[in-house]
Amino acid sequence: MKDCLFENGIIFTSDDTNLYADAILVSNGMIQWIGKKENIPDGNYEHADLKGACVVPGFVDAHMHPVMLADFSKKISALPPEVHSIEELKEKIRQVRETQQPGEWIEGWGYDEGKFEEKRSLNRYDLDQGCSDSPVSITRTCGHIRCVNSKALEIAGITRDTPDPEGGEIERDASGEPTGVLKENARNLVLPFIPKESHDDKVQNLVDLGNLLKSQGIVAVCDMGNLDNGDNFPLYQEAARRGYCQETAIYYMWDYFADDPDFIIPETHRDKSSQIFAAGLKLIGDGSVSGRTAWMDKPYLGTTDEYGISTCSDSLMESAVAFCKKHHCQLSMHAMGGSAISRVVDRAYREENWMEDDTPYVRVEHITDPAADSIRKAAEKGMFFVTQPIFMYAEIESYLTNLGEAWMKTCYPVRTMLDQGVQLCFSTDAPATSWAVPSDPFPCLKAAVTRRAYDDTDCGQDQRVDIETAVKLYTRESAKAAGFQKIGQLKEGYKAHFAVLDRNLFAVPTEEIDQVKVETLYINGKREYQR
Image (cartoon, rainbow, N blue to C red; front, top):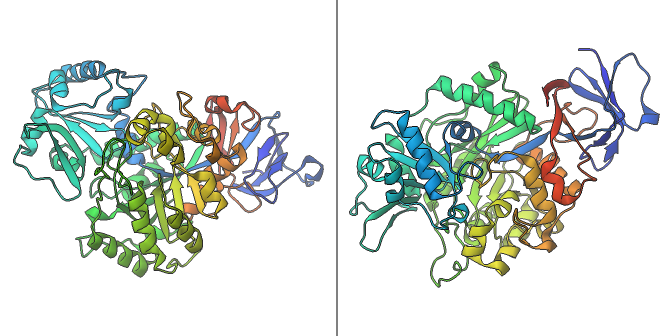
């Protein structure tokens, strides 16, 4: 590949020592030089005119579930603009049933009662009206709750006498009958009965998803685990052979491997210079705000004793810490509520960094309502907080209902955490959020910069960040969260992963950030996407 000079651009680098540049010189997929036009080095190379376009480092989504997202893309979407009401969802279920035989599972994802015209949750009887002779399962947008119909309850053997599993709840009506809503660990009760996709289908779904991610400027992702004991590593290896381009860090959901004495992450899988590598373990410490299952340190609005659910046992956490210390890999824990955050931060605070490189030893995911003490301890020990501005932006109805306006505005205190020295980055948690295209970075950036929801609700103006900071948190800092090598910034010696945008992201009105599109994406200096 001949050296190429990309010139005449507005290039944002995410490198604080050289934040804006006019030109990039790429050699063998790496950035050989970047700077101002008056300093362009002499040489014999091709020229690519950027024509004044805005360029940013390729985005790194540090928390998503690509295998789930790729799978969900083939199922019913229960979100706008596809579905606006329970009645419309019933019709979607009927349409799928017409294409299938009795007894075949019908699956969907993304429902959010706050977005239904009926302003209430699903139940088994709603789904029965869509289909009664086949099992139906619709996963809530948060991924922590699923609603199933009566046929699915029957198949799974869930009755009024079935006890709640540890860390989960089978929702019941006033008479004690299951409503079909399965919260947290209870959602897994039907998993053994849902047919698994073939290996080949999963691989092709990933390849298709990779193409969507390229169109969104995403060059790297963290796969934060399956809700089953599958190993995603071979899926990504095969997908890469078929054209999947994103660098990927994989986390294993420890719930499904802790009891396997032979479980190991091979050294060959932990090479961070590889396109696909295994980064560590993932635990789930609580649920979601929108599902009222995040483990808070004060009760939800309108109650005196409803604090959410702690979903991880002490023994499971201790075994995860022991494994990560022994094998020098990362520990990631889902923690939204203040009690869940304090629990993992306090435990990690007792440890010294066990990593053998500069990768953070502990990541805490989501960070909805951290206590001041948790923020202080995380900053002191170098823990990494991975958060999602898109949550309040897209799910404002449930945040207002479950927390109220005053508490809602204090959630996701991004500005406070940064000011106090916490390592922090942005991501989407796709597909676990109420947005039609959940992996799109631009609504997430808009949410961080405006601190307003999609319906213009004020989400706490004192926690806004400027667009430059937001992009750094979605590129440079996201790359640090998992230990990606030589990406996230445009600087000499880094990989030439960059996106050319259709307008200047740093000059458009903040309310138009979500309208910005990627025109071209380069990975290792090669054009991988053209709009």
